[in-house]
Image (cartoon, rainbow, N blue to C red; front, side, top):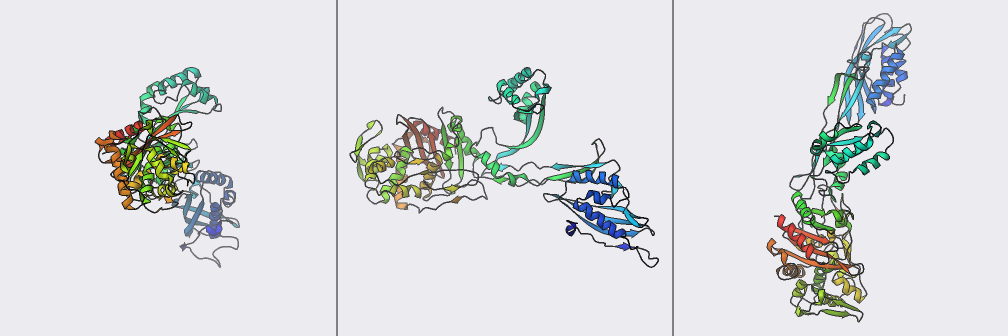
Length: 600
């Protein structure tokens, strides 16, 4: 037989009484028939196994139901003892080990008689041949026992995704009678929980569902289900199923991170299923439990996100009408602490992680570092900050509202955000200086972060003088994501680019580890970022500790409208905020203020 090689059939004890000149006749005897029966049973040859019994029809029916319920991947058997009972009968004591897959085994002993009929030996059939507790007219039922999924915990061990009971509300139209009345009752009850559920949406869903099948109207957390149960439980055609699902604290909490994390770790948190086997009668009623193995829950998974910081970030972006995002990173570790988007931003996709926008004057942190590292200027170097300037005779660059500060130190030009100063600084820079400096701070780096897709941005080399001047104050061809600018802030705070991390034990791969900027060049940039808060463009942040950063206003499209930015850090917390079409940096600074006020 094909699977015979995998079957262990041994006789460990033989109790007999010798008589005559031989123990068995020349035809296959009791041991051979026993081994052949077990081999055929293991290989799935039910008809062959049944044919070795003295009641093939009944044996075949029972064995088919037994194997059909188990759906085994294999069977190992061992003949522990054969005891001869006279000249024409033997009793076989056998151990059976059913391999049910997924590292599940069901092992037990059983006994059956092997009897001689004429010249042939056959297994004396009884339902107890396959299990000693299986009675006539009975079969078995196998039930999988799934453990609850393990939770996903934040950096402090607080649950971000936890198992909760979920109730699915289903509607079978053909059982509903007055479908219109039922759909209206469902919509009235469920719409306060989910504005997307309306009588029209239910009707459309039912219309697309094949006749006789159930349409899922909603999946409700148990507290929500209990609140509407009195209104929907007795509705005709409405059914309910329950399951345990891994859920965030609220519907949209961490919406740009947690769904991806759940998918990434689904095998890690699933645990090992147990199973239960019981005998059932012809009507399917359970009679007796034969075996039970408890499920084994998996260990919790930890991620870098902070529930408290994520909540603070979401509360900070939520009040803004325009699409608004905030990304926070821990400079010392690269841990991604928060990724928050409001509803208008969610409607545009994962713009916090992969959106590419002109960074505006937040780019001046890169430009200032590049200029200082070149050795041509320092923080105290006096530089002109006229209301507007002309680059290469072709491009007029203005300050916001064309403010004019005269000649001031570089640090003050940074604090007041003088476009004209930085445009002129870039004129004499090598084509790739901004590119390389940006990369040293993470802007332009590429990461493979398990569970997330990210883009930092791009700062292409600029051989054209005008383009280079525009790049220096965050216009031109420079693009950045909020994630990328948060990484710039983290790199300035740390002194080198931290590699972003999300799921513990699943390390991020970086396409490169750029050379860190010189500390002597970074120190004045950090001080200039403080002066932005002390007397520059972000005084709203002064009450919230030692905040250092840079504001940004970035024109886009036809140049009529602008996005608002803030990028910076406080201690070991770096972050970037972006308000699309914010027109100025003020809304982004206000988001940062709400965020910092809520974070200890």
